[in-house]
Image (cartoon, rainbow, N blue to C red):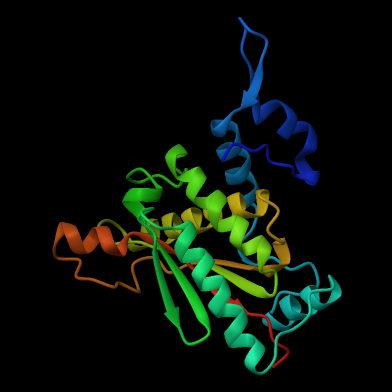
Length: 222
């Protein structure tokens, strides 16, 4: 899916960075490299809760209510998340992204080797389409919070791994926000090497630990 990003805060920059004009035909087409640069720039300015109301979980709830997004309650919670899970699994089939259901939460697990080059926080261009699909589903289901958490393996210094995990989470969140996913839904953070899901003693284990996870949680008032 080719589509131009619309970012109000960066409108002038977007117009030049996200399109390219063919010097021979004069045709204008989407420039995915430009999209990644802008998404990274947006993400680099933010960490933690991105709500404009307050730096807290309550701030996110208030922001969504203020935006007219109704809170879920009772049996509607499970039904809403069931439908979102089905659509997310369909959208991400064969993408390399794992989809896991944990109670009423959804977790998307994006392996680092699929999403980023080694020691880089710039999203690989071939992964743009996957994130486009993620954003499409998120935009269909606005009554959810979106936590984007980066993780690293234990190779190298712990402080470097912490920064890299944060930067990768920022890049993913920034790209999704650039696709019009509501900014106030997000929490962005990094866990560095502190939360492995496999052994760091093997290359395969380290590859699993280098990841970005997106946790999608229902918007409720409690």
